[in-house]
Length: 183
Length: 149
Image 1 (cartoon, rainbow over the protein chains, first blue to last red):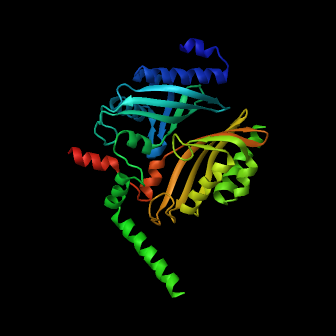
Image 2 (image 1 turned 90 degrees about the horizontal axis):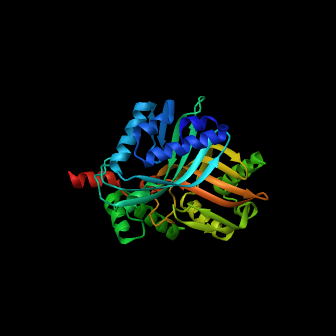
Image 3 (image 1 turned 90 degrees about the vertical axis):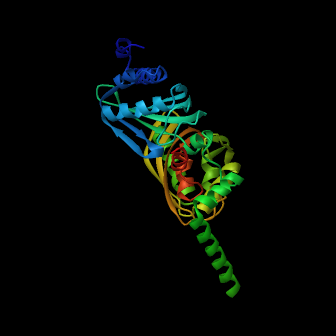
């Protein structure tokens, strides 16, 4: 959708069209197009990492990293929620991990992640910011670097990565048993 | 109507999660309600009969869990709530020995309400923050970077 046709819509429809344009640019790997959907005070919040990108340069940096990590990135919109000041999308992110992502060297594995994106708007009806929610455990599991507790690899991981926690828990358990015996 | 729906969601988080009032689950959740994502991205919980044991298990693992609604708003029959939760790991119900560690997670819930009851809930939150915080897993990025170097 072009900017001209977007401007003819009412406010909620105009904002929804802008968000659709934003996602289309993400799917086309059109970084400049993505940035054009933001206003001057762009920000991007990656909630699971508690990482906050302020300003257009930092937002550009976020997208450069993402598009390098998942060069075949695709985003499917599953549901759209339109409120007075905010639009929320439920999407599925897909891609192949072919570039480093936050310190993780490329694994070559595919990821398919449900993600929730919250969009806010500037006074001139451009994107003020996007805040995303997703589960990193699911990402790491699909990349083969995370194992659930209560599985053998998961149990081994707990013992190897957190020996102090295990020993403390054991001491607490023994003290509890001792306390019961002396009562 | 939107404001009433927001109040229902606020009451849900306060009474069910912060106060552990199990009766509120049966009052505010429809029998045929469906929850997606509360127990993990693909997990489905159906009705109060399945939601109650889920709450009991988590509150036994984290008895002092406290959810704060950071923002909430309604649109039609839906409510979106952005929340944070702090909790101390005191029980082994998640398959991990109680660590005594305090963790903070953030997430978002989108809830649909009909006739004063929750009929559908979609949650997205970062399980990894919780599992790493309580010592269930190490840091994969550190492990893999070390392996690659």
